Image (tube, rainbow, N blue to C red; front, side):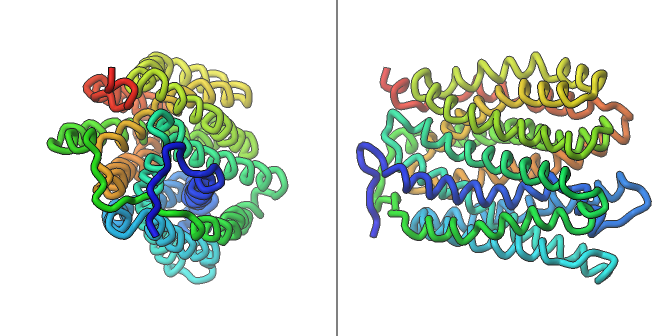
Length: 420
C-alpha cells in the first residue's frame, strides 16, 4: 500500500528507520577505507608497504565501479515499484558483500583467490550502496513537510557521518586493544563482522516502513528544472566537489599513519573527530538551509574552506601531533559538512518525484565513482610521485574551487525562498 507523506511528515520512528539503515550500510562500506593498510597486508602482501596500500586502495575504488549500475537499476526500481523495496534490495546486497569480505581467507592461505574474492565482494558492496542513496534520499524528502525538507534530508549525511564515527570508535578500540600484528591478521575482520551483525536490525526496521511514492505525482519545481540539463549538470559538479573533499577527509586516518608517522590509535581519533563534527553539523546545516535557503548555506562555508585548506595542512605537516591532527580535521570538516547538506537537498529538490530516486542515485553514484573511488588512490600516488605531503590539500583546493563556481550558478530550490 502506498501512503502519501502527510502534511506534518512521517512519525519520527519511521524516519529513524531510514536513517539507521543508511548508517549501517555506510558503516560497512567506509570501514574498508579506514582499514586499508590492514586489508592490503592480508590480500595484497608486498615488500613495499606503499605498493600494498595502493593495491588495497585500488580495490576500495573498485567498489565504486558498480555504484552507477546499482544506482540506475535500483534507482529505477525505486521510481517504478517504490522506495521501500529498493532500499530493502540494496540492504540485502550489502549484507552479501560485507560478510563475504570479512570471511575471505588471507593471501597466504588461498593465494591469488584471496584478492579475487576481495574484489568481487567489493563490487557487490558497491552495487548495493549505489542503489541506497537515491531511494533513501527521495524517501526523506517526500516524508518531510515542505518547510523542513532541509532538516529531513540532512539525516542522509548525518547518518553517513554517524557511520564514520562508529567505524572510527571501533577502529580506535581495536587499535588500543590489539597488537599491530593481531590487527593486521584478524582484528580488521572484527570491525566488518560488527557491522554485519547489525544488518538484521536494519532489515526489520525497513520492512515496517510505509511507502512515500505517490502514483501520478506532480512536482512543478522539479518539472521546470528537469526540462534542461542545467540542473543535473550543476548538481553533478557540486556533488563531485563535495565528494572529493569528504573522501580526502576520510583519508586522514591513512594520511596520519603513512605520511605523518603517527600511531594507528592516534590516527583513528581523526576518524572519530570527523564523525562527531558531521553528526553535530549536518542537522544544523539542514535547519539553516530551511531558514536561509540552500545557496547561502552552500556558498559561505565553501568559501571559508577555500581559504583554510592549505594553511591547515601546512600546519599539520609541520606539527604532526594528536592535537594538531584533531584540530585541523575538525576545522576543515565542519564547513564541508554544512555545505554538503545543502548541495544534496538542492539536487533532490531540482528533479520531479517520478524520476527522483534514479536521478539522485545516478548523479551521486557518478560523482562517487569518478572522484570518490579515485581520490584516495590519486592522493597517495601524488604524495609518492611529487614527494609533497601537501598533495591532498591542493587536490581538495582545486575541487573546492570548481564546486564554488557551480554553487554560484545553481538556482535556489528552497520552497520558502522560491515563493518570495
